[in-house]
Image (cartoon, rainbow, N blue to C red):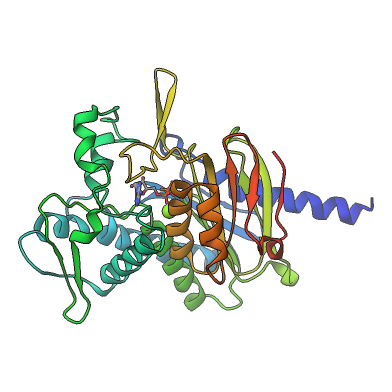
Length: 350
Ligand code: ADP
Ligand code: MG
């Protein structure tokens, strides 16, 4: 093999390891960092309870100033969508929407509408009304525990989204049950990553870079010479390694995995993607669901939904939607790709 090919492979591996390696950082290991290698500027900060890395192919000063704007944008969005921040718009809505219609910002309205749409499309798997269940399990917090069957019972098959009433014309949201608490953890990071991409495009000529928001990866433009980006897929059985890659320009790659946030009790792993039909962490056979497409929030919503649905239903769902592809890894390590996945040059092997 020629030196050039070796160099190209090296570059691919670096990109893959770089993007994926950062995607699997656990919250407690977060290291804020800034680096510039003469071509790419990369800045990592904690935001929204996870890690945001912005990589921009630009001169250092220009990239730094755009990254600064991007991190402020992230904080602004956290103040809308976080269910954990007491003063966020969502927390205020959760506290008052059972008393009557609450006026909400257009951005919160947009995310609620999308989440309810994907709730229907996924036959209830994606369910933002799991806020109470998320708090009960407390996964990733100091209060994480295995709740008792009695505690879980009220959340089983609760179909809470039917108590969320949206009035788009008047810009209000009402909860028709005082038991409802919304958690946007499955979609808000995808929405935010899309917004950050818009900000980069507005502020940068010939924009090129990668946003990695806690495993929600959004690429901007293409690399030098119009080359595609290579994004690695984490091996869910050995999360410090990658087991595959996809490539493309201007794409989003979003993975929901059982290795991202979990605790182990008596040898059982309890992870953070909850099955609204059982009230327990989803146990569909899928342990990693990666969605590739162009709309970051859509990919985020679908990755969570597919994880819960299991291989067969998830493949049928993805194959029925234009513009998205997926690859799922099951608990035996086998991968399952959607019909059009080859257009992203999927290369996977466990
Ligand atoms: P990650 O946060 O690792 O990217 P996901 O996008 O799959 O993972 O979202 C998981 C988060 O969404 C959980 O931490 C929780 O806040 C929330 N959640 C858990 N189960 C569901 C569900 N069935 N529907 C909607 N949101 C969920
Ligand atoms: Mg998601």
